[in-house]
Length: 282
Image 1: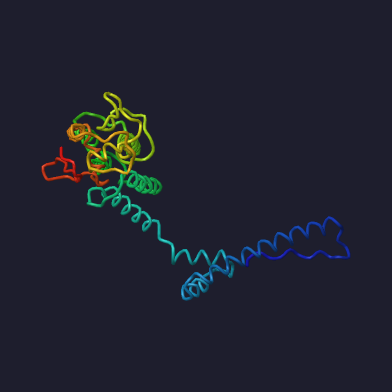
Image 2: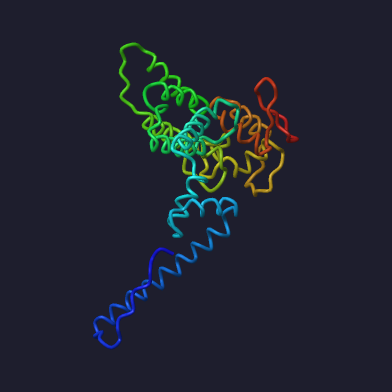
């Protein structure tokens, strides 16, 4: 350890103030020594013995600081190595949606934001200018194709200045994804209750929509599967079943049909229409 213990005052000549200062310095030294010893122990138990021996031989003195300084030369990447690692990571994350890897948009945007922050930290040239924006938008076509394609076409127009930064495009896409998830949430989760109207092809009464979500609708389940565990005020008639199935095939319920396929209430056939597993025929 590089720090030396405080000198002991002459007990025959030292006054009370000198003794008090010595006690304070001695206490501080003891605390620091304990902490340094913990660090020494950690270094000796975690570093490869051969690397530790070489670093000790090269160290300017026997202090912990000198030892760690030498270990850093062997173990820590250089600035150029770190920059290349950041470049590779950023490029890989940016192009990931186009590589066939399945990842939710929120998860990808989170990974991209972290990679972009590191790229900014090392002042990476690959995030400057229009080209990285185009790369980002091409990847964004997987999650929001209409918006991304529109922005790509806008960037391609001659004499059209771009006023948005790469980070602002990412923030914009994040907001669009959140808005899209909110609008589709009634079809995707089937949990809780909802006050939205016209979310289910099965109105409880004419021109009135129930407040619960389609995945909790017993009449819809019965109409599509021929059975339900939920309590019904009345069993849907054959005419009601036919009406519900016809209404479900409209474009308004495209997303709902996909969710019901996952739920097992219907299955898709090759021509895009739905097939119903229940015993009741439309």
